[in-house]
Amino acid sequence: MIPRYSRPEMAAIWEPENRFRIWFEIEAHACDAQAELGIIPKSAAREIWKKGKWEIDRIDAIERETKHDVIAFLTNLAEHVGPAARFVHQGMTSSDVLDTCLAVQLKQASDLLLAGVDRLLAALETRAHEHKMTPTIGRSHGIHAEPVTFGLKLAGYYAEFARGRERLARARDEIATCAISGAVGTFANIDPRVEAHVARQLGLAIEPVSTQVIPRDRHAMFFATLGVIASSLERLAIEIRHLQRSEVREAEEFFSPGQKGSSAMPHKRNPVLSENITGLARLVRGMALPAMENVALWHERDISHSSVERVIGPDATIALDFALHRAAGMIEKLVVYPEMMQRNLDSLGGLVHSQRVLLALTQAGVSREDAYRIVQTNAMATWREGGSFLDRLLADPIVARHLKRAEVEAMFDLGYHFKQVDAIFRRVFPRSSARASKPAGARRGRRSR
Image 1 (cartoon, rainbow, N blue to C red):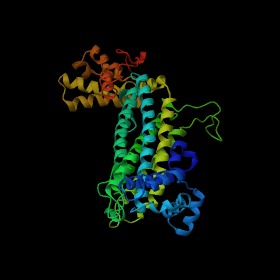
Image 2: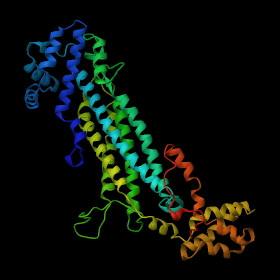
Image 3: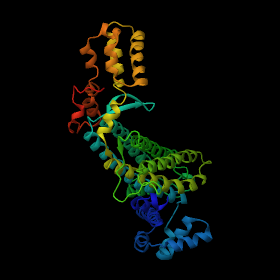
């Protein structure tokens, strides 16, 4: 991944130095286990830990000749360890090192991703409570539907990312798997107790049947989980992009002093953060399919998966990590305009209350078909000509025949739509749903026209 979209903490996981350090620890822990089993001298195991060193440039130079990265590493390691190096890699195969290392790296990456999700969850929770009762219009098909609160919108995203966090935690556990089973995975030349020891030392589980590689269904699920979280990020980003449109202007990304929106038009304030998140989400989601195609390897092993994972391992985790923290920062500083939300809510003259009138007419004895026709006739007139939906209903003789004036007026109470907000918040935020004040615009009794 290019530096522009990389956080140093995540990028460091995929640097050669970290990879070779993990390789060395796998080999050295395996030597410790074999020494305890009496397979190699204990003095050799101690010597390997003491003298174990490597140089990235030297490994690269050796690999240019050998065309094999693990052999290049072992050769360079032996140059430092000396005679005891003959006990390194006893009974092991390259995949034991490569697959176990990848498991460690993906586990490390998962920890950073979980921290990113946690930051985003905290931001969503804070802003949801802040705007728990801030009225805004709910839209279906992009068209005004019925009133909601901005806090409810954010609570929905919180619940989605909470599910994503649970999936990521499970994917982390599933991918954190060790395999030290030798050629074709039979343990013919290495004791299973060596694998168990290495797994314990690295905080990994044991792969039950590794063939010679760890089965790639684990990796497919991991990258698919990243793709789902990326899709959730894109949904959040698109919401912000829509709300920032000039015709809407209900919320917008923070525009810092000195920031420029356009090289040509000085007035522009563009949703660049959410657009960037949308693009990164496409990248991460696109890496899930190659991971699924990696599942079908030949027999006990081939390396068709290797080139794929060398790309998607770093790129998917780095891109998602960056996008998560960008999204968290966007929500933390999001500028919200309750006045514009109320203005848009009122812009159709009260049409957003049409369902209440429909239901009231049916409860007053009018058939649903006739009630729908009566309400829609008045609604379409308001849609085309403007004015007040309430006034049209009050002037309709059929409505007056079935409903009293006070009954019709009561149906335009904005607070009616928010009577279950507390109940929803208790579902989403059971430990903190008592927080957040109610803005004046959401008080019961306010009429939306």
